[in-house]
Length: 412
Ligand SMILES: Cc1cc2nc3c(=O)[nH]c(=O)nc-3n(C[C@H](O)[C@H](O)[C@H](O)COP(=O)(O)OP(=O)(O)OC[C@H]3O[C@@H](n4cnc5c(N)ncnc54)[C@H](O)[C@@H]3O)c2cc1C
Picture 1 (cartoon, rainbow, N blue to C red):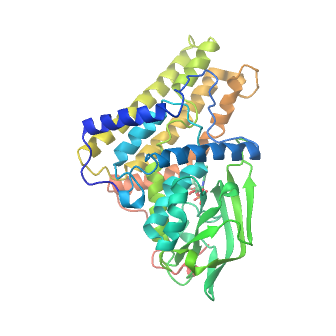
Picture 2 (picture 1 turned 45 degrees about the vertical axis):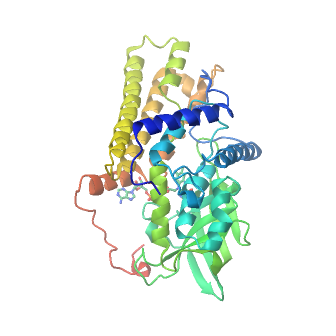
Picture 3 (picture 1 turned 120 degrees about the vertical axis):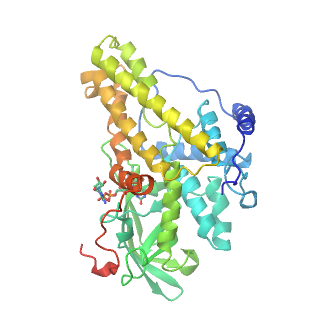
């Protein structure tokens, strides 16, 4: 999707100026607020969350219609044919303004499911979904993880059995972000239990209002219900909604996960950061405390290092260098920074973190209780470390006991 020749610095800066001028015509400049939300996950009543999604969809549509929606896609696929560096610049420009907010379901739809359908969909599926997903007209969730298959996703057990001109699906998915608001799901099922685990999978596009689909939101410790359990009970899916080849579901899954890894860590706005912590430390008169000063310094350093590594990564790509599995590195470091900010909030606030003092500082509880989720989402810290060890450091691969064994014979 990315053009082979990287853009020049001058080209990128010109793009930044044009994009900034366009965004300024649509959104007010960002206000630095002392009481800014530092939540990592939404904790909103159902109707308010739906209204937030509608606002984000509206902004997605405006952006798409102006040519800023699918910057890295080829022009013939409805994109702008630009590089991922342009996309990063556009995200930086957006952060200078008050956007309508963000929601994981719109990101999953535009950044994960739309490009997967573009890659694997039939002409009819692409016609049905690609532009509607990119424009924010349709929303799709990721129906991958199961109670016994998360890190070991290829071991999943939701069964799809061929019947006539379609398939009958039975099983359970879990941690499906935004499933309660999604019109579609990208569903991965086991179609051949006799094959080794990666080979017996097939992907489908599931309309979420199909009879037999039951979505139950899960209450998280941070308060909200941003993800769900999805039960599939004799769900009938026509073969025309199969995504990719029968038995080709792992390739589809890897493509979606690849888009997810590229996307993770890009969300610099999630949760609180140094500026929020410093604001509260000053308001509470805590900036003389040596422990507070030490940890604020650590957060500042972590944020600067993240900026510098993003810059170094960008320079490498500008020079046309393949940066490899650097997405795993970025995601790991980003999750660690969220945890460090939690520690710093505890140090700055003390008992105010657990008891609402009525001065607005209690909002940090939404950061502290949400941050651990991103040590798991999109591949856990341990799994990222394995990827870094194997693909960046060239260390020997982990032993895998189920290699060459039919899925049905794998002990579980
Ligand atoms: C906020 C959030 C949103 C999510 N959204 C979605 C979604 O929209 N759709 C979806 O399908 N899923 C989603 N997930 C699920 C997510 O992909 C899984 O939770 C994740 O892959 C981990 O799987 P698991 O929960 O089954 O944990 P497990 O795989 O059971 O892991 C448990 C623990 O064991 C460790 N572990 C596992 N294997 C290894 C290994 N080989 N080496 C070392 N340690 C290991 C893990 O790191 C972890 O600490 C979401 C999760 C979160 C937290």
